[in-house]
Length: 124
Figure: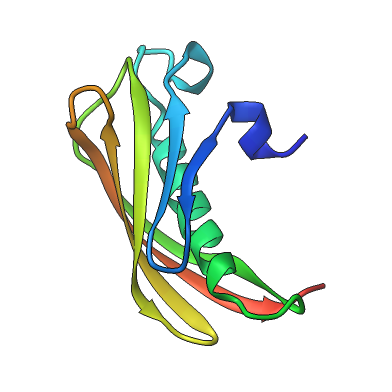
């Protein structure tokens, strides 16, 4: 089982132009204080960016690998469904940069924003 399956991440849209994924908030992704753990925001941002980057790759010899992520936590979340909306800033052949906004679906409140750098590398 991979992390997407384990955490119940669902995909809405996957393309090189936009990727949207969602994650229902449960106790499994919360800090002991009852709010979503900040690492979940980073996980969603890198996941959405990597899926979008994979969609931009035209062969099966390369894969996207996250090399840098900057996440700003804007407001806490404790219920509802998180939506991560990733759009490319630059789609290079070796390096890509993606902007990811995360918000609560039910209230449209933005909870985090990230910039993710992806390296396109040969499969191991």
